[in-house]
Length: 400
Image (tube, rainbow, N blue to C red; front, side, top):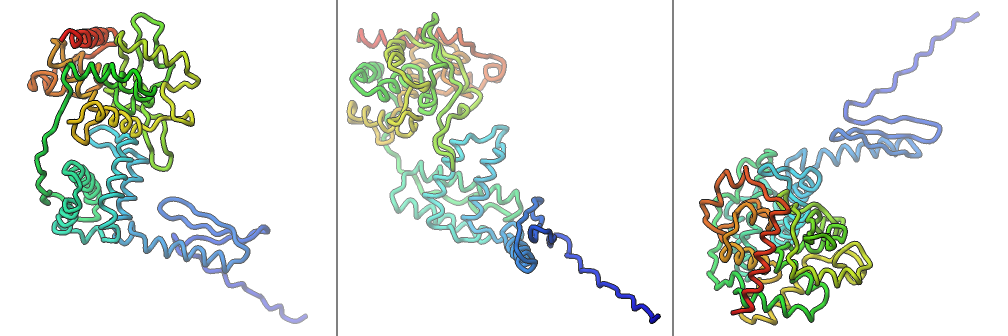
C-alpha cells in the first residue's frame, strides 16, 4: 500500500470585527453586519454579492456624519428633529409636544434650510448667523418670526454642542435685526367682545362654536379642534366639559388627536350658560364623536379654524392688527376676567390652563408666589365661579 497523503484544508479567513459575516445556506447566501448597535441582514444569490453589500454598508457608515463629524446643517437639523420626535429630549423637565416639534420643523424648512442646507455645522460662525438673520429682515419677515426661528436654530446648535459636534454655539451672542415697533391692539373692549360673540350666530358651525369656546371659555384652537362629545356633559347640572385631547399636526402622520399642550392644560371646566345652547343645537345634528369636523368628517385643522375665525373678526373690526385672530379672543377673556373681577389667582390659573398666572390677571408679584404656584390647586367645581363671572361680564356688556 502506498503512503496516504494527508490533505489539509486551509481555514477560511475570518472577517474582522464589525465587518459583518456571510453564511451559505441551501436557500441562498445571508449577509449580516452590525452597525450602531443594530443588526442588518440581507439574502443574496451569491457570496460575492453578499460580501459586496457588506462592504457598501461599512463604507457608507464610515462616511456618515455621525462618524466623520461632517454634519451639514440639513443633516443635523433632521437628526435633531428626529431625536425630539422619538425621545422628546426633555427640556426644563418637560417633553416637547408634537405640535411644538412640527413648528420647529416648519421654521427650519422655511427660514434656515433655503440658505444654509449644505453648510457644514462645524464651519458656521457668528458672521454667517448674522448674515442669515439680516437676510430674513431684508425679505420683510416679521420681527417675531425672525426671533422665533433664531431661537429654534440656537436650540438645535445647543444640542450640537452637547453632542460635541461643535465646541461653541455660533448663534449665541449674534445680534438680531432691530424690531420696528408696531401699534398692537391686545384685546377687545367688553362691548366689542359681546358684539363679536353675538354676531357669530349667523356663521358656520365651525366659526360659531369656535368663537364661543374661545371667547367664552378661553379654549385654545387645538383644544377646540380636539374636543369630542364624550368629553362634553351637557345633561348634568352644571354642564361641564373635559379638556383631555388636543388636535395636533405630527410630522409624517398629519392631523392626530394627542395630549394637551401641558399638564396644566388638562382640566375640567364648568360651561357658562351662554355657551350651552350653542353646543346643544350642534349635538342634536352630530354624526361624529368630534364636536367639530372637517368637510370629510375628520379632524379640523386648528390653523384653518384660526384662519376662519380671524377672517370673521377682521370683517367686524377693521382696526385689528394683521396677526390678531381667534386666539385673541382667549387673551381678551383672560384679561376681562382678570381686570374686571376679583377672582383668586389659583382659580383663574386652573380655568385658563396656565402654568403661571399671567401678569394681565393681577399683581405680577402675586403671580410668582411659590405658594400660589405649588400649593394651591383648582377643582372643577371651583370653575363654576369663573363660569358665572363670565356670564355676568356678558350681561354687563348689554347694559352699557
